[in-house]
Length: 128
Image 1 (cartoon, rainbow, N blue to C red):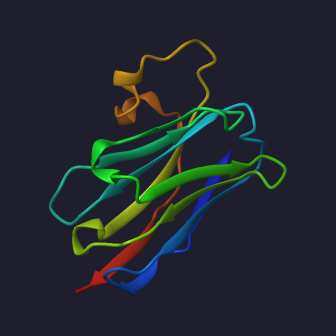
Image 2: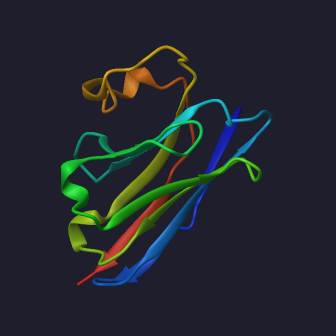
């Protein structure tokens, strides 16, 4: 499976973006998918995760209700809606898939090594 993240761009602080993570070469409908982000000079940071049916979602604390993760399995795509953007939200946003069918503890969601495949990232720039 290959993931293609898109939807990034230059946005003013306070604005909104919807990022898309489209899969090709296979289905992600049985996989949990997460979004991570990485700012220049910083480590990759977990943002949010959605279960394979879309019923279970989990967010990093910093999202503060401004981020919404969703998916459309018919379109083989996962989304990340970001509102009230802040300059500190800037960075490259990556999506990643987790093929594990067994139960995964919540405190493992933020571990990049949990994920089996990654997209190439989409750049988000926020102007103040």
